[in-house]
Length: 266
Image (cartoon, helix red, strand yellow):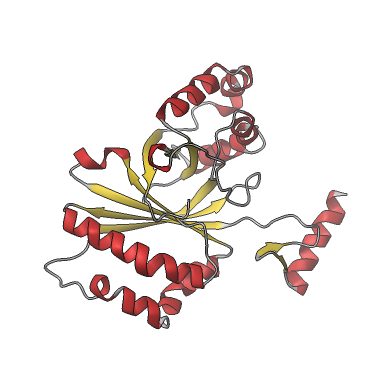
């Protein structure tokens, strides 16, 4: 059966991909792994924040929607108000790597985008809209090949999105940590415990590597705390994290708690 499945997928690469509902599928109906871009704007002033917000809400997201790129998330760290280096995170789901490569040229040809983004695009050198911008490119995990819209019911203003980044000390140990999420069963564990994960992905290009990232979501902060308490006490997790083959595969973990903006698709 595995041999047949390999031949079927190889054939679909030769003959072309089949699309259903705007998603790419191989002939055995298995969804292909999505790509994601996470853009991070760094800024200092309220004026810069407003300029970035106006650009994203009125120019960038509408341009993505015209390209059938939906469910883009725009988030601000809960700690933004007290931070010296303030940030805005944009999560962009992509069906292929080519979508990212072609995006600058596509935006350049989009007259509506250029008009709506004029103030942002034409900002003077001595009054820029941000202090720095980062871009992280990721590919979805095999067991979570496509992003999921979270099933949240709490008030929008109280919802918490948790972005986690796990760096590994070596490439081999990074592969080991990715395996722990997939073959090891960490992804199904999060699903069973109701973490409302939006994506799990391997960082393929970014300033912090080797690295993986994922995002979970909760109705509010008490729900977030309760979920992690349940996770830590879960017998399956205790067994998994104690396995000898999965030791020392994370050298640095970063946790960023976020709220979605009012214009975010998520």
